[in-house]
Amino acid sequence: MCSRLRLAAISILVAAAALVIHADGPLASQSADIELRLGRILFDQGQYPEALDAYRNALGADDSGTARQARAGVIGSALRVAEFDLARREANVLVKIAPHDPDALSLYADSLWASGLFDQAEATYREALAISPELARGRHGLAKSLLARTKLDDAMNEAQAALRLAPRDLEIHHTVGTVYERMHKYEEAAAAYANYVNLLPNKDKSDKAEWARAEIRFLRSFGQRLPFDMDPGADEQIYTVDFRLEKEKIIVRAKVNGSSAQDFVVDTGAESTVLTRPTVQRLGIMPITYTLSAGVGDVGLRGLQLARVDSLEIGTLKLRNVPVLIKSPPLRDIPTRETESLSPLAFGFSMTIDYKTHKLTFGKHLPAEPSDLELPLRLYRLATVRGVVSGGHAASFVVDTGGEVISISHSTANAIGPTEMRRIPLKVWGTSGWEKDAFLMPGVDLSFDAIQYKNFPVVVLNLDAPSVLLGFQLGGIVGAQFLKNYRVGIDLEHSVLRLKRST
Image (cartoon, rainbow, N blue to C red; front, side, top):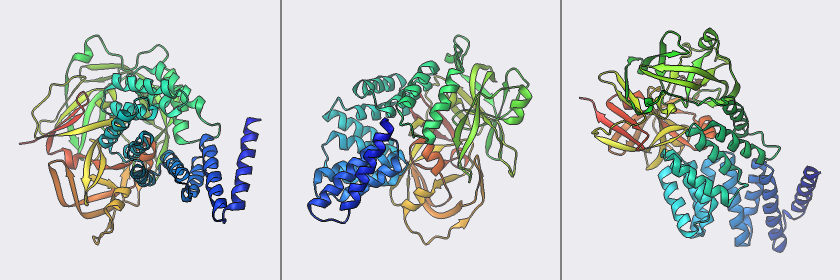
């Protein structure tokens, strides 16, 4: 009955809008007001593309208050459908109109976050909270920022404070679940994701919604098992293993479920340990559910399986109850077979890679080492650092030990603006298949603080699918081409990337 009433309300509003859409004066103002109300209804029903259209139609309102509300609606809807550039443009306008309004500042911070500008976003969230300490969206944004800096307890405190202020804000429930998951508290994470799903409109079939439903099933499958369980004192130790380099990839040996050791690529561009279908079949590992993954390649979003392994051993470290991603179904028509991979970051460990001595060191707490440069590091599902591209365009770059080159996204290339430099077509293989639209762009200036690349050729990739899944715009990827010249320290405890030039 409720659904039919909502549909009737939409029909009435649409009909009214049609009657006045070409009118001037008072009727035009009525039309904008109707579009604004229609946008709210559609947004509440999870019909975000339609809500975005309605809010944009209301932007031309004569009444400044209506136009401001419509712009806020455009920003919120654009963020929901991953129109990150649109959200940023409209947020820039909104914050100029209302520079001291905490809600406008919070929306502006949301757009900065979605652009991958995490430090600027945090500063703006704090500015909004200084004006209005009880601003739920400000607390929520600050929680995400603290999570990215691996300040998990502080992030949870902010997320819970936001939840008390806005208990029906579904995004806050999702963030609470994300923090619990990083804490390895899977039962609590599943409950938070369930609250998120229960608040979703019935029509919400988005990738994020489907991911949450699958994640709930997976997290609850652990029951009383403690994820990433270790022997007492193991989390205080430091572990070092040898690795070899093959085609710029770091290869270590690891054991799954007590089997013989096999090769794993150390891949900080992956969120979890990854197994191939042949390994899973050989060891009798049963998948639990499906999830969504995204990477470079024409496939874009890729459905894969989730499972749990009883043990994973790397050197003297033994982890129990480890979540894994299974590359099943496998990709077809590939140049090389898919490989197993792991990342100490997925365990919650910091890590140091010495490309000169071929040593990988990892642990919960690594001693600070002297470095030539420290870059702020943010870990929000993937580890990123800030880079600046030609023309002063700032963006977030994934620190990807499994990648080979330095690349930028199509959106970053577009932000640079037109260039007379020749674009050289490439055929790039990624985790989601062939990337047939990739190309080499010469003449790009790149900087990562004091590290400068002048007139440098970069590979341009379509990173839209992973950006949608992550919830923020990826500016590019830095792989071995960038990292191999340094002793690389990825320190989660202090949220820095330490680089010491090899001699």
